[in-house]
Amino acid sequence: MNEWHDFFVATAGASAALVGLIFVGVSINLNMILTTPTLPGRASISMVLLLTILIVTILLLAPYESIKVAGTEVLVIGLVVWGGVVLTDFRIHRNKQKKYKSLYTLNIIMNQIAILPYIISGISLMAGDLNGLYWLLAAMVFSFIKASLDAWVLLIEINR
Image (cartoon, rainbow, N blue to C red):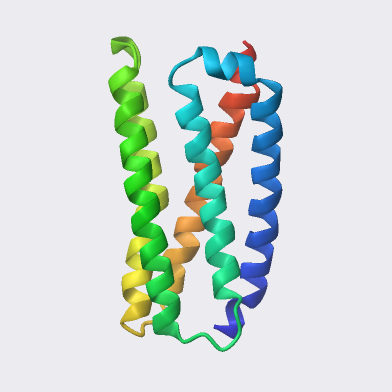
């Protein structure tokens, strides 16, 4: 996994910076976010996606960790995050106005595209397959994209 060291360092730094940005953005627009019942959940999902990247990369930067242990960590984190996001997504979807439900369904699909590769990566790594790291790469890229789209809504669209 030494070949992935620089990637993990870069993604840890980028995710930490973006978590900070979203935290500041939520703080600035807190009143507007709290008046829209579904936005606090959306904000928490975007922060969870970025914190997942941060936690996974920190764990994978630990020295002398076996590929199977790394896979177990990624799988457990992926399953916990998946469960939490699914519950939050369904609560948001249930509370959406009827005219916005189909649009939020797209949001749910995007969250799944960001999270499910963590689970696939964890299973692959536990089986000793280093190619599972490419699933982790996909999870992190899609998580960055999804969290950035959510940040746009929380920072810009909310003020329109």
